[in-house]
Image (cartoon, rainbow, N blue to C red; front, side, top):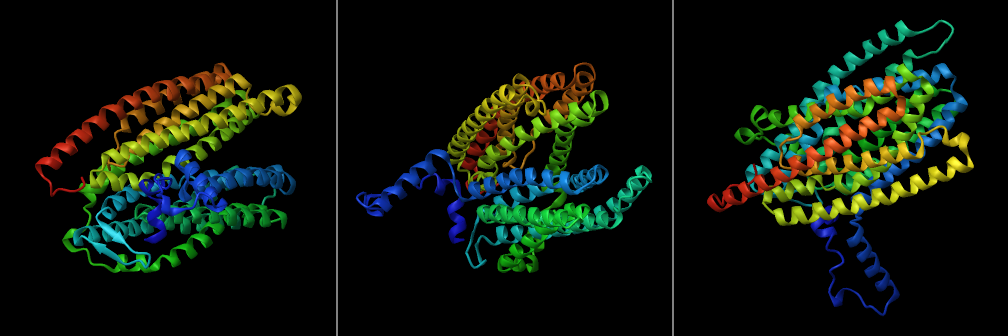
Length: 495
């Protein structure tokens, strides 16, 4: 794939190891190049991470602008509809069932036996080629049906919800904007599996670049809708921008995708019941639990302590989440290469790159957290009215520490899931029950401070300790088993 191949970690992390013929140290440009190579080697920064950070950084900054425009151009009632649109559309996780991550790993494991040229041509093992085509074909069929079910479910559900809770005094025109946002979400829902498939094929930096374009286009269209006094169309415009950029991107990859969609897989097709569903349903349950773990705080605080308490917790969590998203970019872009290495049995490279990336991303998180915490302490002394919009510095520090521990859990989970297994199912259910119960009790009795402490103990301390125990145990067990199997059956590949 030319440029795409350079995004594999074992290429990126070795870019500093150049011989004396690669540059002339006496040339300033060569010195700069060598310095940049050393920086990339130390930080783990590559094109995939760079574009992912840009996309998430843009989303964070654009979110600030969007909030200001909403306050300027929308009434309080319209603002409620605006955010409720987004909350209802987020229910697409129910229809997605975690399949996108499964697709990525399936494609990564099959792609390890193949060579994909920049022109889209594929060479290599015939069976792996057919199985790769089967992954794409099944994912397109699954999401086409799921998108239709999602549309026919969300449209009437939204009409019922908003009709029942609408007040005559609000006079908000919401029906057409709601139709538009559901239809736009249906299109982007169908594109997501293909993006995951392409990441699994090694096009990690290409997809990250595309997602940055999606974030920028969506924000610009939403801002235009707000400024032109069509604010309730802004959520649909965000998704429409993503559809436009994503559609152009998929057209540019048609030389790879179309032959795979047309290929006859025959007896080499991926078996849904045997190979996909056992992995997928566990991922689906884990993701569903995560939805409750991280989304329950604000509704509980709103109900028991009022909107102001919920707002402080919401803003504090959004800041911590933004930092987590940037740090996780270092690890999430390695999901496809990890799958390749596991399929090839290259556990030495897998462990070296994983632990290096974990250290790099954790250091980044700690550094960013220290900056945020220092800024909050300064604001508390200089601008107390502004600091009152977030939690106090000690509680905010506790949220950041919890987010750091969760970052380690997410990284360990990604490593293990790259084996096409989901060993964190029981842990996800248990942490969801503990965190949810803690939030309900502490939110009523002690407010946001109690919720944050309970979150730290249940998800941070217990979750990270149990998760790390699972990681250490299964990493040793699986790799020992694979190495033994490779000695006894050297022709066996993959799982």
